[in-house]
Length: 343
Image 1 (cartoon, rainbow, N blue to C red):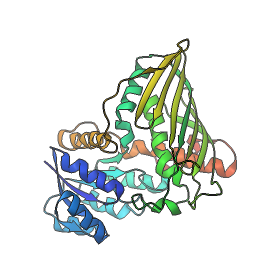
Image 2: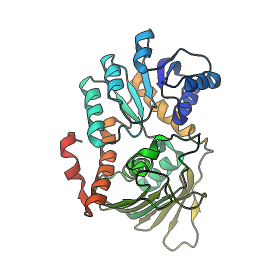
Image 3: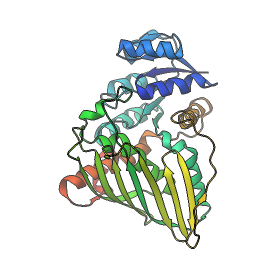
Image 4: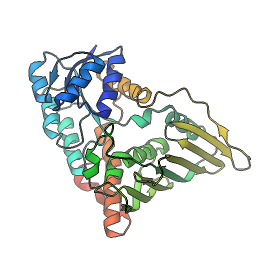
């Protein structure tokens, strides 16, 4: 059994607690969170366990920790990563790894220098719909992809008590907290790497966010694919909107819900064909698959997935978007990456 310390007991941390306690290969040995009320709530929901106000206090007190799941906000993580690496404890850290590329690269270099595994919690890679889309592309069901449109529309009320509130004061909350998933999915599903980004970010007049909640980008990939991306956290309708349409040589693939609703059609077909998908327990099923991949790596030596090193390329896309919006020009990824190690 993998002895796991869970740090961070907000919205996402409680998802992790659910997943770890269900696992047959892991034991959730302790909680860490600076908020006493969060520790009390976790104990009520998942059972009494040793509880600490910090990771440092937990590591100093516990006899054995085999892995650390870090679900705290993506700020000021360096000391925690250094502590874990000094004890050679594998890390599974919620996305984004940090709120700028330089800081994220530092965390990756700390882990790599200590030969400690660092996995990033990119749960959308593990959705059944994601795997099904990859299969459609691999089977060339509608030919080679050449261009796509990815639209995500949401009214995210950052003042809701069941949502993390730190994005309200972030410089680019949509990019760092939401678009990171979408950009990572593009790289993962298409199997291509970005080479250039043209982007604008902005806020509508009614936005509750201090930083830009709207993102519009044209992304060019090294296989020739181009993706038009539009995402918002301040869409002016409570009903969410999602469509990821990929136009291929012989037809299209269309995902119409972020957790499912996958279809495809050949060019001359009058209607879309639905792709069967298993039932989905939102936030839990895909996180369970992600955690299983982490456990398989730590216990069995399986290949590390969603590595910190790989994550840097997705974060570089965010940095390129920010630079492009600021200067009005297209930004090449090669101009963003050199200072942050070889990817």
